[in-house]
Amino acid sequence: MRDLGGGHAGGAIALSLRENGATGDIVIIGEELVAPYERPALSKEMLLAQVDAPISLASPERWLELGVTLRLATKVAAIDRTHRCVLLEDDSALPYDILILATGGTARSIPGSLEAGAFTLRTVADAESLRSRAQVSRSALILGGGLIGLEVAASLRQAGLEVDLVGADRQVAARSFPSAASDWIADAHAKAGVRLHLGSRVTALRRVGGGIEAELANEQRLVSDLVILGLGIEPNSRLALDAGLPCRVGILVDKDYRTLGDRRIFAIGDIAERPAIDGMGQSRDESWSHARRSAATAARAILALPPASEEAPWFWTSQFGHMVQIAGNTDERMTAVRRGPGVVLYLDGNRLTGIACLDTPKDFLAGRRAIAAGQGVDVALAVDPANDLRKCLFTHMETHAGVAS
Image (cartoon, rainbow, N blue to C red; front, side, top):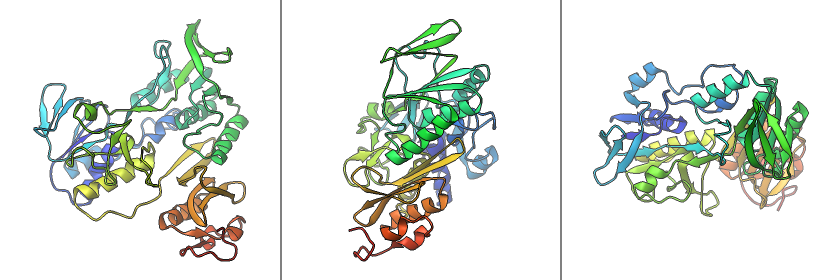
């Protein structure tokens, strides 16, 4: 079994395969110098110099004990589906029975940005370089109002830098968060002194003296010591495309993460485009939780085990001491019901489809479980945060007093 991608998803599926009884050879091929790890610390603890490295999925001894071979600092040149092998850049070849693509993505940039000295953040090496530069900088400019841009902005502000953030959308994290959660995060940043420039974009970056000048579309100019690009990722789908696998942005897969073009090849993590929960097309999920969920689901399919219970998609971010957690479907088609200042419930009729929480982990856990179980909500009870959310839920969808219809 060959696993292309040494990140979180690639490491997680190797562990899941062994935990579920896989006995064959497992080889992880990764381009980075470090063993599989979790990425959240890159934009938080590593930038704040609270840790020297992110959380590894297993110790070197544990990988050895599990019989998982790590081929680090290794690049794959091509996939040969006819002969079922992967071709490495050193001209060697590795055969496979099952191939798992966990190739993740590459940080997006804008023309001229890297030449002007801008940083991206995707790997341990990126985090180390950015931390070193931040420690000798007084100001930073973040391009991108998504989760990575926001987390970097929060970390650098906490480290004492003056921070400006430019985002193309009118709301922060608009593509990931419902409006209530966007407002929570924007408020935390504003209170901490981050200057938000929303609904704008950078048209040019240039070196000026010892810093970098950014020109915005409204002709405003911002000069900072340090520029970081938080513009999302481009999925690394080139290997799959060249091998003739169906791709759109990522690699198209079924509900078990098996590629639509080859039953012996799976794709997991950021790269996978899976059928959406509502059945409308395919969707990608770049979250920490999806790396683990997709790995566990694919591992069970590879081993012909019954699928585990499907759980609602969820993700989280921690910034300025606040925890924001989102689960399920929170889009505008749903009815939003506020449960005090820190919880919003999203309903389809009386069924809970999504939840957004600010510093309310107990409600979030109850909501996640209810979404997965298809439970309904007694709104009259649920709007009062003094009532335990678990006691506001019901299993059967019949309408009764106090329940939204």
